[in-house]
Amino acid sequence: MNKIRKILLFLFLSIISISCKGELINNPTDISHYVIYDPRVDITVVNKAFPDWSPQMGYNHDSDITKFKGKYIVMWNANQTTTAEGQPGQYNYVSYSTDFVNWSQPYSPFTSGANATNPVDIDSQWQPNFINYHDQT
Image (cartoon, rainbow, N blue to C red; front, side, top):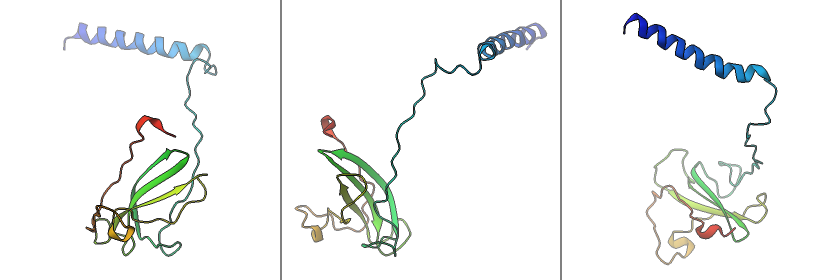
């Protein structure tokens, strides 16, 4: 790059920098023109790792949550016998709540033990996903 181009680039970048800084320097405390996202965040525990809760879960991962027809529904994959991912015994579990504080006993819905019509009894179930069609909260 020749010397003139370098000087022009430097001047151009300096002008951009000065104009950007100039806006902030005029009134650095006025943030009224900025849109600030400030959501309400609620934290709840659905299932703790063993040995605190029953069923005891050593591995909890891949959670998904939705609100559907007045109930919060959370689903995740877990393993009752180990803390490692992808080991035998990893199933999807579900729990629900009407108040986001008190949760139902987790169970594995897609197994013959849960009387699923089309059970998936292999012990390597992976990440569940919800779709709330038409936003039916």
